[in-house]
Each structure stands twice: as C-alpha cells, then as structure tokens.
Length: 321
Image (cartoon, rainbow, N blue to C red; front, side, top):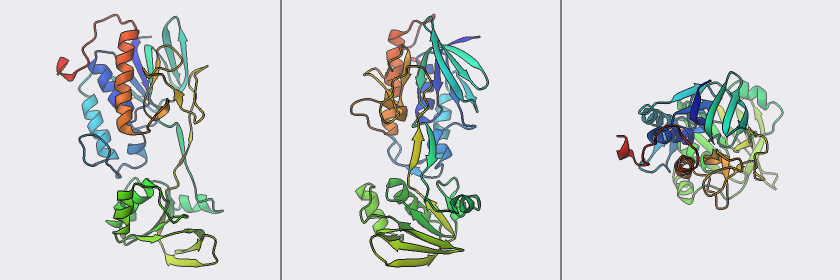
C-alpha cells in the first residue's frame, strides 16, 4: 500500500484548493469524496446560483467555480477518488490509515474538508410533501434554472439563499412569489433592497396553508387572513440540517458538530487537520474565502511539523510556476 504525504477528505471548494496548494508545496496528495462529482455544495446543490464573496471574482456560479478549481488543480500531480465514503481514520506509529467503503490508503497527514457534514433540507412539514417533491412540484435546491422557465414560482424562506434565488428566478420565471413567515428578512440589506426593488412579489408574514392542484393558499401569521394565487413550482429555502460525521475515534468536536481546531488548524489528534465549514475555533467565520485561507494555514503548519522523505517547495507560486 503506497504511502502518501497527505490525504484530503472532501472535494468541495476548500478541499480542491487545499489539494492544489499541497501539490504546489511538493506534497503527494490524494482527495477522497463520497459524491460522484467534485465541487461540494456549490456544485451539487446550487450550480447555477451566483456566488459573490470569492476574492477576485465579482460573481461566479457554483459550476464555474468548480470548473476553475479543477483547472487549477490539474497543474499539480494528484489523485482524486470519487464515490468513496470514508468509514474510519486510524493512526498507528505516526501514519494514518484512511479506510473507505472501497479501499484503505495511508498518509503522513490528513486534512478534513468535509464541510458541514451530511446535509438534509429543512422541509415545509406538510403531509404529502414527499409525493409533491417526487412529482417535481416541490424543490429544495436548483440544479437547472430551465426547470423554472416560464413558470409561476413560490419561494419559501427569509435568508440570503431565498433572496438570491428569487432574484435569479425573476429572470426566467413568469412570476416569482417570495413567502416569509416574519416581516423582516435575515439576508444582507443590499440583497433585501434588490428584492424589494424587483418584480418579485413579497408576502410577509405568511406561511404555507394548502396546495390544491396549482392553487397555493397562504395563511397570515397570527391572523385569519389568507392569500391565494396560482403556482407551478415551490422552492423551499429553509436551510439544511447537518449531521457532522465523526471519522476518527476520540476526535474532539464542538457543540455544533464541527471539529475543534487550534491556531494551526490542527485537531486534538496530531497530524489530523481541518479547514472550511468542518472546523470550529473562537471567532470562526463560516465563509468559503476563510476556508481557503485555513487550508493554506493547515498545510503550511503540517510541512513544518511532519517528517517527509523528500524536499518541499516554498509557499509561493513563483517557486513552482
């Protein structure tokens, strides 16, 4: 069994960039991802949704971000294993064994970039919801805007995701209704202003009451008032429930299920590092841009702490390109 310098668990944006940076430093690296495609949440949950907080990119879709990261990764030697679920991480005599449902691989260091863990969408909570979801009437994320072209759409939610999707759907849908159970939205003020100045029809404070064929009924909160209009599709943006998977015995996690990290992004297990949404520490900000920096920090820390059988390169791109 060939021994690697580094195994990265999770091929989301942070994991892909971490692999590139590790390769740039001269580490032999492999990435293991349980999904069949790389890219994490931006690729699998909202490939056409615009992302605005990546440095140097005014706006980029989840699909294009993944494409760019894979092009960047292609510049260094690496191995990418898709469709493999990590079952166990063990350490013996200073070397990690990472066991998946298909294989076992060994490495000097491990970096967890597993994101928030297993994701399940928060649902409307109605009796026939599963049936309506199977029929395509209810969705929890958008993989293609074409599905909503020329449709009457109701978006449920009050956060940034619901606001962003409402603005994007406005460009392709016949009508967009944004329904929120409170009078105030949780999203950024600038996004709220854009929605209010758009053609999106905002209904607050309302909740779902009934759906008969294409007739949606809303009920006003703390009132007997109701509102009816015709819809073709419902997009539920109530967020996602997370279930952070503990991959290593005795791995310390915080109350919210994230892996506790020190200032070097190392967990309580020597040589096991974490970056991105999987990590937690005082002052943690759950931003992708922060995750990129955490990955660099973790890899630089492990190059100083772990022993390698070959020389490493410097930490700047000029040392390799």
